[in-house]
Amino acid sequence: LIENFDPAVQRVIFRCLDHDPARRPPSALAVAAALPGADPIAAALAAGETPSPEMVARSGEEGALAPRVAVPLLLFALITLGIATFLIGKVGMLGTLSPELPPQVLADRARQFVQQLGYTETPRDSRYGFLSSSHQALVRRAREADDSPDRWDRLRTERPSPLTFWYRRSPRVLVPDSEFGRVSFSDPPMRISGMMQVVLDPSGRFEFLKVVPPQFDDSTEPARDPDWQAAFRMAELDFDSFTPATPQWIAEVHSDVRVAWTGNYPGQPDLEVRVEAAAYRGRLVYFDLMHPWERPWRMADQESAADRARGAVNSALFVIILVGSILLTRRNLRLGRGDRRGAYVLAGTVAGVFTIGWAFQASHVSRFDRETQLFINWTGRALFDAVTIWLMYVALEPFVRRRWPNLLVSWSRLLSGRWRDPLVGRSLLVGSAFGTAALLLGILMTELPALLGRPPAVPLSMDWDSLVGTRFAISELFFGMRHTIVNPMFVLMLLVVVRVLLRHQWVALGLVVLVFTALTSTDLEYPALQVPFNLVIWLLVMVTLLRFGLVGIMAMYLVGIEMPEHALTLDFSTWYAGNSMIVLLVPAALAIFGFWTSLAGRSVFADD
Image 1 (spheres, rainbow, N blue to C red):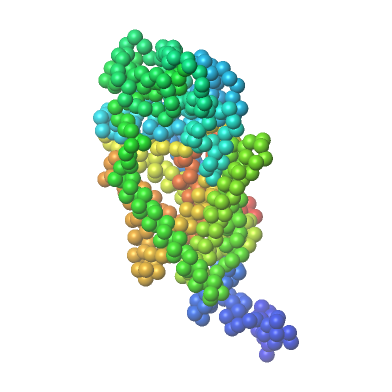
Image 2: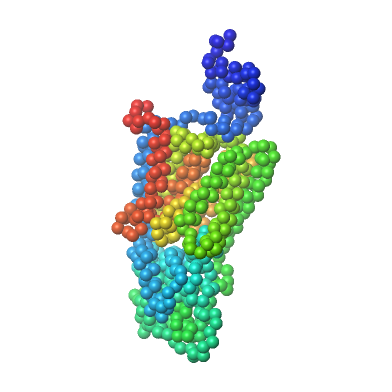
């Protein structure tokens, strides 16, 4: 009788009759899953059980795409990426400002200015970078006072610029306190005699100086003025056109002479600029160009109500997700659930990409004790990220595996080492295509008001660190990969928590979309025009998550949300074009790899 069954069914029967109990199927569910044509996930769910990670990886379709589908998806992803990169040069802050001088030239000019001011000592260490601390104030001023079509172009031609360049030097090795291990404008603090901060605008004009004077000075030399006009010349200001004023701003460094002037930038009579300066023993120790909108930030809270509200919401979401993760993880571990292997792989990946990003951007030093301190600071943050993602994954993965197992099929295959699986490739390709669509939607959201004849919206901002050099651009890529893993997990975790609380899938989906739409729409100048674009983008995120799983949403996040943070341009004459090409290779390579893998070895020209 057994001989009349399908050979695959015969093998299952013989396994059930095996003399060795260890080789028999452990349950009726395992027998049902092994039968030909059976859907192991459906069988598990019908039996009231949660399918195992291995069962999820084995289930589902092969995932291979026909060439007639894969080719258009690849072309869409690559062409849309090119179009978005071209347009972002028009509507992005980088393209608006178009800085002409690379950081190396600006650093050399800062060193020349320092020597002209009388600081001829050779420093032990020096660092530099870009700063956009005045960005929000200038944007707010332009939005409130200027409704002309070229209001953002004036940021490039008029002073002050929202982008500045900083240069620091020190008689000791500069060792930052932050976990990212990189010297910044304010890290480490200015606490060692001889430490110096210099700020230039993108054209190389002098804007700011602060020098820490000696801690001990037993000289009796009387106070004297330095050559104030030298600082004005470096700032390209006409000293004779400025009027002496009473000093109002007190520097954080000691001085024996304080002075101030008021006047205007050349060719800008409508904007008053106040120059505050101080000297010690005949050398300039403080110089700053102040503007009417600046407030004493050390004396009062400068956060707006919107910033406080956004911070409160983000903090509440983080606490909800973290506490929920801990409680769910504890429950899952007690019940023996959870893909621990997958959690360890994910946590190790997050720590690994963070480590590579840190290694590229950290301000490494030759002293072993100082480098050890940097390493210890990094270890704390890397371990925190790894533990957080481990908790989140163990907490939510069993729930998702039971309620939405299709979200984890390609993900489980990827974690099991099947990175060339067609379903993994399909998720990467579709996620890349949807990511470029989201990127283009974000650009159109910014450009729409100008197309409708209104004052142009605020240009897209970016992370200016990627302009400093190639190693920083590579570092930002790896930090972006870390965000690509962590942030979608936060989205999924919030979705799971809301789903558990509301007990209705579609209501939970709608609420999560509305929450993220609101969080990303707080600073929009034209809410009625721009919020619908944000809503569509987050709907696209949810569609990608539910249809193509974690692999798909991570690919979408990397391409659509992380890419605008980098210096992107197709103008090969700019000094940052090389860094842009490095960044653009990542989404292009991701889409091409997904395309090649999704074909499952078939020729592009094969018949369907």
